[in-house]
Image (cartoon, rainbow, N blue to C red; front, side, top):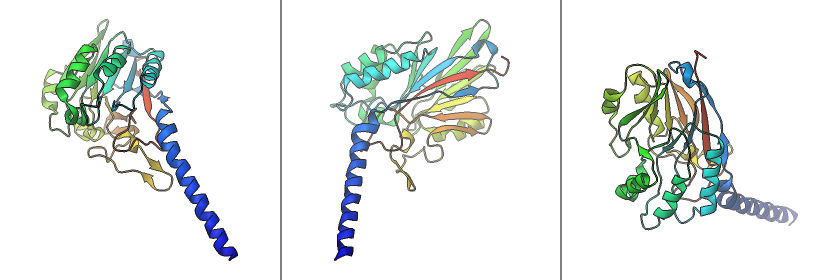
Amino acid sequence: MASCGRLRRLAGAAALLGAGGLLYAREVEPRRLEVVRPELTLPRLAAAFDGYRIVQIGDLHLDDWSRPARLEKISSLVNAERPDLIVVTGNFASYSARRLDTERLVGALRRLRAPDGVLAILGNHDYLTDVKLIRRCIREAGLTELLNSVVTLKRGNSELHVAGIDDVMEGRSRLDLVLKDLPASGAAVLLAHEPDFADVAAAAGRFDLQLSGHSHGGQVRIPLLGRAVLPPFSQRYTRSLHRVGEMLLYANRGLGTVHARLRFGCRPEITAHTLRSPEA
């Protein structure tokens, strides 16, 4: 009888712990925004760009759960990092165009401020939602979409190239077009929603850094059990910094959630990259 009582107490404690963990994963951790500040040395970066700050956000997955106060907090944290450039690495929405408040999305994006502007690429969920609607929001907010294209930033006679490819999962990436437009010299950063594209990008031998999202860092990572199921093209490089050949890759954990509105062991992330030049 005593042993039965102990078992009941243990079962009750386990149930309480599980319920508490679920409550935390739903109501607490998704709101615990974390700003991560890596310093990245790029071999081809000119001294004029030493200290250049790129703030990366992505995987907003904006729906009716994303309240205005949270979006204002995100934009305030981004702007507080005093970025030279802001990049959004895809997945502005989830599945439903009906649940997407376009006015709220445009308003949130318009609050982002950087001297060199805000660049964006699309992700797989943007196509699953309504790609024309997402592109309209991007334009109205004043963002520049990199659609298999390149922009060049200048500091005096020095250049930094930022390229972006369209979504890999949707079969719309055209690295050949990017490489055709990319100048032969100067550091180059590639925006690619899916992090596992880094194997292809690194093999091209022209990029110093790839910035990606897509995986949400696993979104739910249970101690001893590891990460939850990951989407395709994020199996190798799930989160944080990696070296792929001669190229660096950073996989941002994203800001939103998908499928289940849960995060555990994987806080939403804003990444403030500081670029360093070996010439400085």
